Image (tube, rainbow, N blue to C red; front, side, top):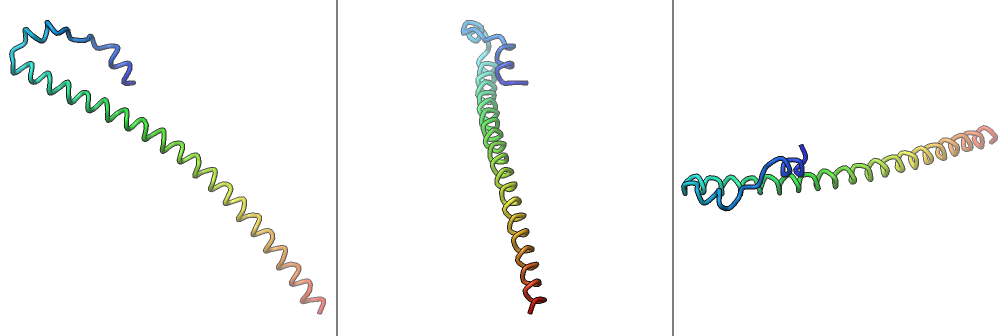
Length: 92
């Protein structure tokens, strides 16, 4: 469930509603509200981290593909040099 959806489905508490609650319950609600705020902030940070890691993963995959291609080109050139060297060796 998205954070925005969670906020939309929960009705906001009115200040007058909180005034009628005993102090221990109000304190408990305040603590719970603080914890919920921290959880929401953590969720947002995790979403940002996830976006960053996905982008980093895409970048690394592209870099890996480029390095594989470069490796394949190098291997082909080396194989071609070996064939030429063997040809020169046999010609001598």
